[in-house]
Amino acid sequence: MWIPALGAVIAAGFFINCVLEPHVGCKVIDWEDLISTFALIIGWGGARDVLMRKFTYFGPLLDAKSEPAKGILTNKLWIPFIGWCLVLGYGNNILLVPFISSLGEVSWNGLMLTLGTLLTVSGFRDYGIYTQDRKHNPKFKAPSKEQSEAAE
Image (cartoon, rainbow, N blue to C red; front, side, top):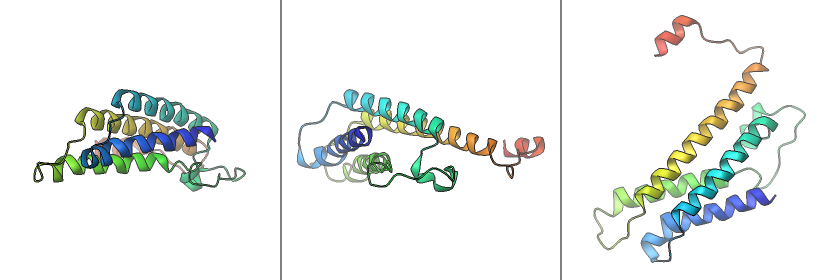
């Protein structure tokens, strides 16, 4: 339970940096420390989830015998929350700051590094989960060579 709790605290850090700081002027949480912690927890947590097949909000990909965990923190809602903080940070920089000069700007480096980490690790996690699901699903058919070439 401590990992999801840590995730919620990290999500609060992104909320402070992306939403509160530009408008309220509170102290920025060091982006490097925040992103490093986020990368560690989502990277190792994602690898564990793929190996243990406990990624609870994918529903049908779970084994029939596994019982999904209940609760806000165990469902990894903190990961999408960080994504929405990034949306608000980008929205602030792109939609508000050009028109309201008194607003502060969210660090572009922080936004870009966090977005890159989130997309990379989430993509690897999704690929691993779907790959494992395909191995155990007799209805799955690999695309033909022609379909693969047409997709390119």
